Length: 246
Ligand SMILES: [Mn+2]
Image (tube, rainbow, N blue to C red; front, side, top):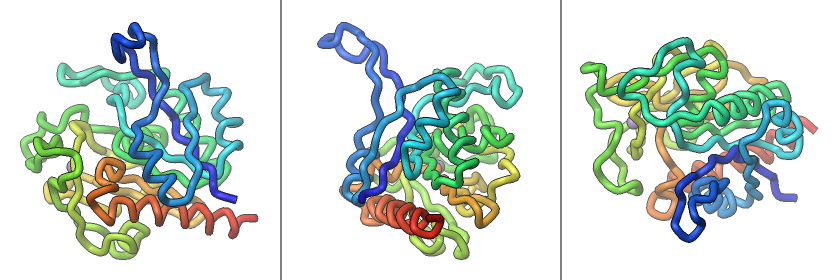
């Protein structure tokens, strides 16, 4: 049996004249391609009431959290700064419920970009609402080059899941104007850009399998072996995790 991996989806409005602006539930296709190529069956969870998160999580073996909107600063107790971009409280609340449920059931989570940010906030962490407001954050984190291009380097903790995959350094793409400020205490940082931002985290304990990356492997799976390799390794980890706990 292939592992089934749930991806909480997003809603696109004003999609195309063809659909007369009918809202569309979706996930970026790179996640589908990356997980299918790795031998998993991805399924999309439409944004839903928090009370449905439990049944959705029970229906899958693991979770992948996708990119998208800014996380609403109301959730971590700040007012929106002028540079805040679009948010969705409905998506934030549903994804936090999915995250909490996956944590309670010890199901693996791979959190990508916004996924890393909402996971951090779900467990009490905070975010920089816009990294351009902080002169000390000097690396270009919203890259001008195309998505399959590696834009900046990250230093990786050797003794970590990501370190086992990438080694001590990797070159990654970067499309985030927000970033982790205070890391949630259930997490440990395992990857950093040269300006000191946390670009990757894992869970602090052995009971949970959580991997967060601030970059977008799903946008470079065709060009970058390590990017598809991350999905391959995650799906293998999900299989091993399931076998070990059953
Ligand atoms: Mn970055």
